[in-house]
Amino acid sequence: MTQENTEFKGKVRARDPETSWESAARQTPTKTAALRARIYEALSGRPMTDEELLISAGRITSTSPSGVRTRRHELVLAGFVSELRDDDGQTVKRDTLGGSPSIVWQVARSASVEQVLAVKRPRTVKAEPVAPHDHERGMDAARRLSLWETGMPTWADMLINAYLNPEETERKIDEEQEN
Image (cartoon, rainbow, N blue to C red):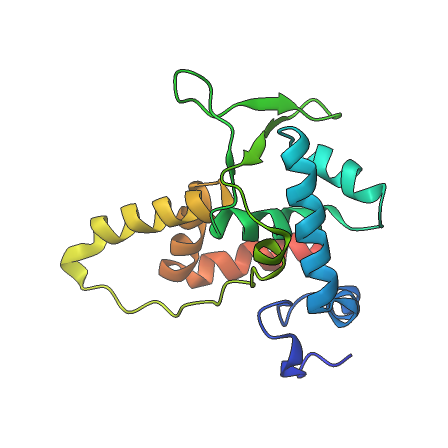
């Protein structure tokens, strides 16, 4: 695989290792749709964490943790899956095998197999520049989007800091790569 190959645009970053490109080459719409269907089916039985979904999906086929998270996230964006909430509206979490808290996911609305299979990978949308006077509003929107997309509002802060301080960011990356 060459990193100039545009066939995998949006699936692999240019800086990703060769193994990521090889993995992207093995993915087909049929395979990813089938995994989404297995995830939805598993969650129809009971709410689960991503780790529990991986174990459940792994019984049927071998898949990576990131593959399970990506397909589950696509179902969240399509409105078929959501976080499980307790009576107070708080997100329910369970500890992973390693002891870290993990969000518990549930079926949000009923869907046919055809509907789940039809879910598509969301397209990346290019952001428009923000006027300087809207900086705080833009930061708030970026944090909300980051929380919605990744579950980590601090991811937006890291990206914006990298944009505003490219030299410092490049220095930190170079230091990490040397270690």
